[in-house]
Length: 198
Image 1 (cartoon, rainbow, N blue to C red):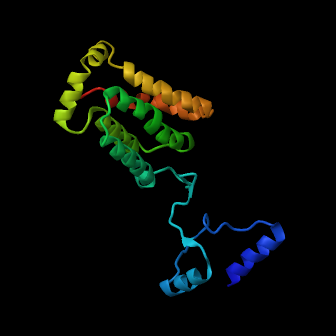
Image 2 (image 1 turned 30 degrees about the vertical axis):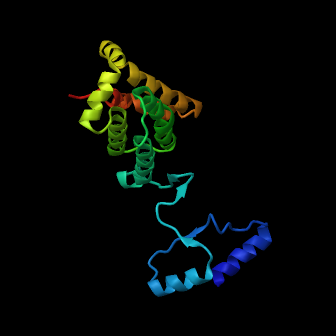
Image 3 (image 1 turned 30 degrees about the horizontal axis):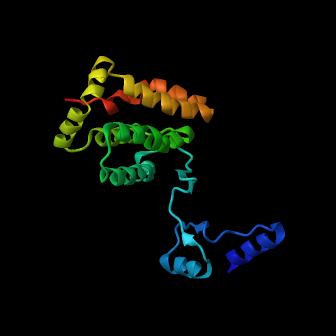
């Protein structure tokens, strides 16, 4: 009740009211009985750490792989939806460039993604581009023989397109320090996303 009275006094003083739908309550070293009593009074849901703002976790230290689980799951959901559709190689490539890359570009513009997360995203994008099944992968190669002939002559062409697209997005965000990190990470080895490893 004291907390609710405090929130009410804050509303009357400032004219700002807490949004029930967007507000959460966090507990630390509180027994279950007291927690239930507080939850019965407060109309908010119990939050989980780390706190997120616009989908990005708010933490004072560097990100770890566990903090990026939401990003991985979001990419998985997108890819699962697309796998049920008959998409061409060019269509899958366009989705990677325009949709999936924008997901982790936003995160990378705010925080430094762990290397393990980058590799996991890279693996998922490559798997989606070339398809998971070896038979489907072979069929995809056969259907796109002309494209791959050009790729063999210039093996980093598509990787460069993806990289340039992501870097342009970062430039528009004016995140210069993030762009420099791309260089230190050897362009995130994006060529491995589009090149088939025998």
